Amino acid sequence: MAGGRASARRRAVVAAVTTLILLASVSFLLSATATSSAAANSPASRLAVVQRHAEDHAAVLAAYTAHASHLSALSASQTDAFLSISSRLSALASRLSVSTVGALEKEVKAQVKRARSLAGAAKEAFDTQSKIQKLSDTVFAVGEQLARARRGGRMSSRIAAGSTPKSLHCLAMRLLEARLANASAVPDNPPVSPPQFADPSLHHYTVFSDNVLAVSVVVASAARAAADPSRHVFHVVTAPMYLPAFRVWFSRRPPPLGVHVQLLAYSDLPFLNATNSPVIRQIEGGNRDVALLDYLRFYLPDMFPALRRVVLLEDDVVVQKDLAALWQVDLDGKVNGAVEMCFGGFRRYRKYLNFTQPIVRDRFNPGACAWAYGVNVFDLEAWRQAGCTELFHQYMEMVSCADLCYNL
Image 1 (cartoon, rainbow, N blue to C red):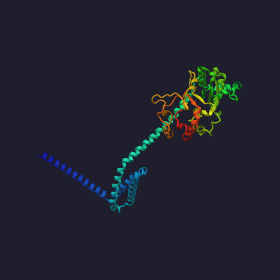
Image 2 (image 1 turned 90 degrees about the horizontal axis):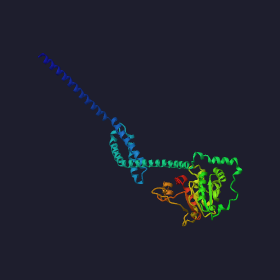
Image 3 (image 1 turned 60 degrees about the vertical axis):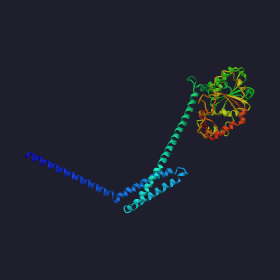
C-alpha cells in the first residue's frame, strides 16, 4: 500500500515536470515568433527587403535591356519599357530609407510587379536568341577547324605526292651535284629556241612538275606510244632550283625516238611577276598555301603565244596510246576538253571549290561535274577570246587562292 502511494507520487511529479517543460517550450516559441514577426515588421527590415527586391529586378531588366537593344526596330518599345522601369526602380531604391519606406513601398511593389511581367514575357525570346547566338558561334568555330584541317590536308597531299622511295629521295640533289662537278658536260638551253618549240603544226604538251623521274616517265611513255614521235613537243616547266637537275637528267638520257623537250623554269617567264599576276603578289605577301606550279595552267596562252592548242599532262600519267588523236577532237568552241569523272558525289565542284565564299556560291553549281586532271586539251584561241586568264585574275583579286579552292 505504501509502495503504491510512492509510485503514484513519482508519476505525479514526472507529469508535473513534463507539463512545465512543455509550457516553457510553447512560451519560448510564441515569444520567438512574436519577436521575429516584430523584427520583420520593423522599418529597417522592411527597408532591406524592399531595397533588395528593387535592386535585383533593376539588374534583371538592365540585362534584358542589353539584349533588347540588339533586336530589330520592332523591339524598340520593349527596350524603352525595360529602360524606363529599370531607371524607375533604381531611382526608388536610392530614395529608400527608414523614414520613406512606408511611403514608397507601395510604388516599389507596383514597379516590381510590372518588371516581373515584362521579364516573363521577354524570357522566351531572350533564351531563344541566346541559343541562336551560341549555335552561330559553334558553327563558326567548326568552320574554322574545317578550314585548318583542309589546309593541313592539302599540305599533306603535296608532301605525299612529292615523296619518292628512299633510294630516289635525293635524286635531284645528286643530279645538281653532277652539274656542279662538270658544268661543261651539261648544256644550257640554246640562246635561240628550236623552231619546233613554237610550231603550231606539231603536237604540243606541257608538264608542270619538280619531280624529275615522274616527268621522264611521262615523256618516255608518250614517245613510245606515238606513231610519229618526232611530231611531239614537250614543254616542261619547273621551279628554278630544280631546272639544273632536269638538264642533267635529259642530257644523260636524251628524249627517246626523236621527241622534243623544252626545259623551263617559271622564273624565265617574263609575264609572271607581281605587276601582272595576283598569284605572285599573294606568294610574295607571305601566303604559304599557294604553290605556284599548281597555278601555271592559268597562264598557258601567255606561255605559248604562237600555239593554237596544247595538252596539259599531269606528272603521274603513263601514256599507253598515241595522243595525236587529241588534235582531231572538236571542242565546239569550248576552252577545255577532258574526261568527266563523276560517280555519285565523287569529283563534284563542292569537293574542289570553297562554297562558303560568296564569289563561288553565286557563280558555280556545287553539284556540277568536275573532270580528270591527268589529261586536258586546251584551245588557246578560244581561251584568249573568252579572257579566261583575266577572269581568273578578277577572282584572285577578290579572294585569296587558298580561300577560293580546296585543291587544284
